Amino acid sequence: MLAKFKLTANPKRQIDSFLAKYDPAIAAFARRVLVRMRKRLLGAVEMVYDNYNGLVIGFGPNDRASLAIFSIVLFLLGGLCASFRERAE
Image (cartoon, rainbow, N blue to C red; front, top):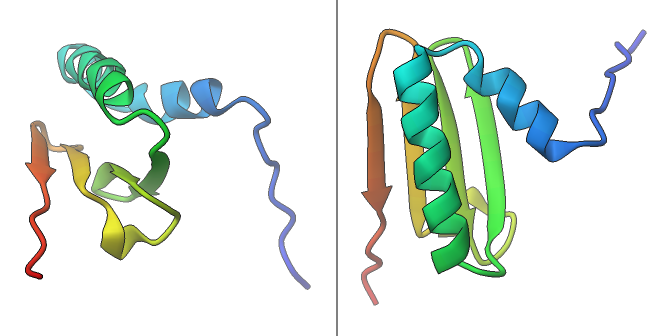
């Protein structure tokens, strides 16, 4: 039998629930980074992956994670990493 998942209709509420697991200073910094990147990457698809040791939020032209051009990673043990991806043509 397949498990039933409750989908959250509000993406902001869902991101807030993910960020609630982190140190308040790291969560606040992540929110500031997200606000700035959403302004700079207008129209980008935002992908979120939450697992046992970190939260990844990536921005790309579509829903393929391999095409994401920017991502931030929050680590449960503390810390935040931001990266831009450069493609070889």
